[in-house]
Length: 106
Image (tube, rainbow, N blue to C red; front, top):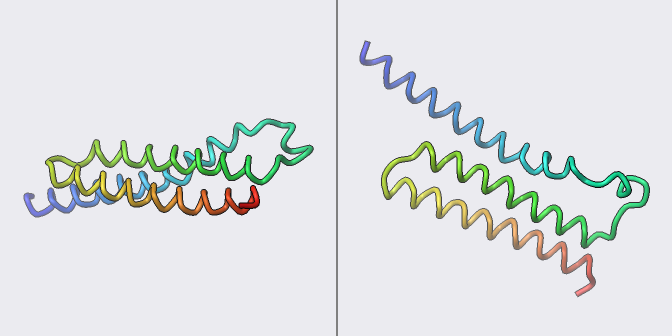
C-alpha cells in the first residue's frame, strides 16, 4: 500500500500544476472579459490594449504564483517559485513594454 501512496501524491501534485497552468491562462482571459462594450464598437488605441494585456499577464502570473506557493514547503521551494515568477514577469513586461512602445511610436 505504501508504494501507491507516493504515486497518488505525485499524480495529485501533477494535476495541481496542470490546474495552476490552466488558471494562468484563464485569469487573463477573465480580466479581458470585462472590457467595456464601447470597445467593441470602436476599438481603442493600441497602447490601451497593450496596457490591458500587461495587467492581464500580471494578474495571471500572480494567481499562478499564489497557487504554487500554497503547494511548496521550505525555503528552497519558495525561492524557486519566486525566482520563476520574477523571470516570467520580466518576460511579460519586456514583451508588453516593447509592444506598448511600438504602439505609442517610440
